[in-house]
Image (cartoon, rainbow, N blue to C red; front, side, top):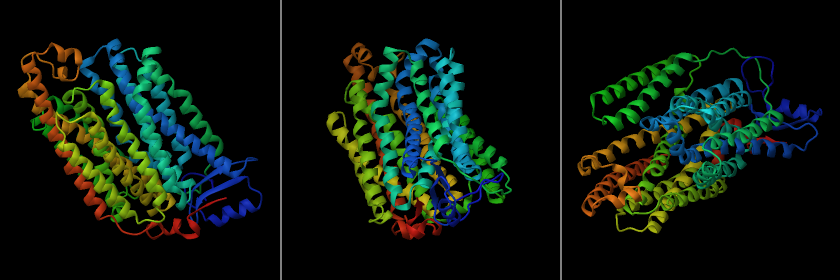
Length: 542
């Protein structure tokens, strides 16, 4: 447990917590045996009930962030049509992506220094502020700025929610609960696009943002009422220089790849210069982290093979997940000739396969070696990627859906062992930054890969585009009908070629993920757990 007496957060022994309970303290212990952690305040309420309410608050918080990433995409074309500025359409998403990615390690470190509760509330406040303001936007510039503010909060809400789950559930329970939270993302992926469309048609695109506000407020209130943490005074210094260097280098890299790579090409001097500057910034960041007394992203974490290979594997699975979300519907609609609804349904099986596999893996964690689960997931997702690369214009939408379901199943089997292993491998005081590092690598890998694959696709389409021809003609039924048969055949063929190259890239990434899982340390949950979470059945839940 941790006792509040001033600034900073320092774990204190669980024996003190037990004595407090025996003395009649109205608390529920949710702290690691021998280490610090969160405490659910229950008052006259049954302890188990308090933890259920905290969990409900975390689920609602994750749901708001997950739905924001899926429902908003459906509403944005209508929003842009009303606000204008179609040439800056990608910035509505890029601004959110930039801030939500670069702030993940920072919020993870702050959660370790100041406690999960305080930083979660601040993150949710920023997220809800950006959400509400996005709904009031009257220009494209305002919408971009408010989306950036929204992403700033999302960078804290998601990893800290997952970290709190690691705090309040025991070693035996974590795998099952992480599967539940994976299910939240799966459900959001399924209903988000349709929900965004219905809200936009019946109300307005602005209500896609507004309806998230009460859900986020309830989440914040549940944690405020039933989750409390206490701290011991400990002097510390924030790594401001490291924060700035990481933010600038990652932002520069994403800008160079997302914007320069798409508009100018990955080999243009401007794009290459931006990539070089961002890499220089990353080297300075690594130098700073090696010298800082309290680094934002402690490099010694990655000396632990559990965290090192989990980060590599998470990069691969995040890349496959985000890239498939971006390009598989395009294949279904542009090459196979399906409708927008049919294209979206090809991802539904992946969205179902992921949480199902994640839940199964969570239940097997205490009986099966972490590495075996990760390797099984790596093999399954690699087979799915190979089958995807073998599909062509004569393939059916059903076959594509089955392949994506297989791929999602494999990714789910990789995700849960990595996340739970990382949380178990570190003490309470480092769980926030360790969890956020996994989330960071998963997101940054996908963001960069999507942009690179976009440049690959543009290069394949360029020779097939006649003067004045719109590349979207292959995706829009009305535009397809206006093209001459020869033009349509040429355009669809070029799209098929470009996407086939991208799917071959999927295979390379999947193999990389399989290699990372193969070298992941062997051993079960207890064997790979930090001593703080190993004894006495993991964490004490009274």
